[in-house]
Image (cartoon, rainbow, N blue to C red):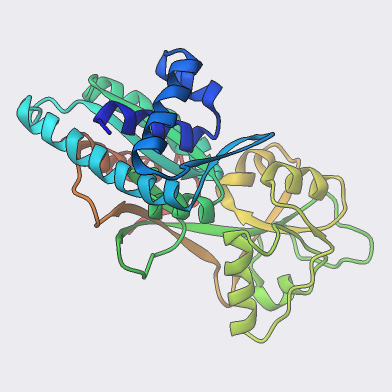
Length: 313
């Protein structure tokens, strides 16, 4: 096996498709298939399982994938050091973001990176926070923003921001629901008794709300479970219930009179924003530069009010 074959194999395994990998790598699909067959012959075992939807690594393929990523990462570091990129970092940096943070951070980060580090290429992927964490553990990304501290080995997190969560409802009170004027603080136990529309059980925000409810002896019994923040807001605006989301997610609609909101107290609900990186592989200069840049951009978004309801820690 050679380095080129390892790069080809990683691309196929991550994209789950020979055709997509061939398009990304700019080589013919038959040539790509031949490389994989040669690798399988050399190792004496199948590396990929073909199915109607594409390909997935076999058990042996997973072993090769894990080691190939580590080898390619070390080669990238060596190349960067040899070319003297200390003062002018170059290369690709892969970043994982929860979708709600991606909407706020991605564009300012890309603009800042292009202005400060024109030779660095960012690859930003968005998913639910739990999936982003799994990408980090699988070495598919270099940096991530998460909603919680990670306690297991191999990943380091730095707590940067704190984000306020608010209770909100339709512009006019639902029949049979008695609430104070919007803007009045509500205790969390009272909020928990409302007909709530919340993200599903696997969502990080739902896990936080369940923990807070258990801590104060309350029980959450949502009338609707839906993960999409935009869908939650539309259902609430239509009068189907109430919800709890980050202030930034509803600030524009509340300002336009499309939603009403109330701060939460006893306890106030907040969640932390963490920047994460792997401790199991060294950072390239490009990753190190973007790590520092992400800290600056995140904190600037909070300080300037561009990210409503957050404060720098």
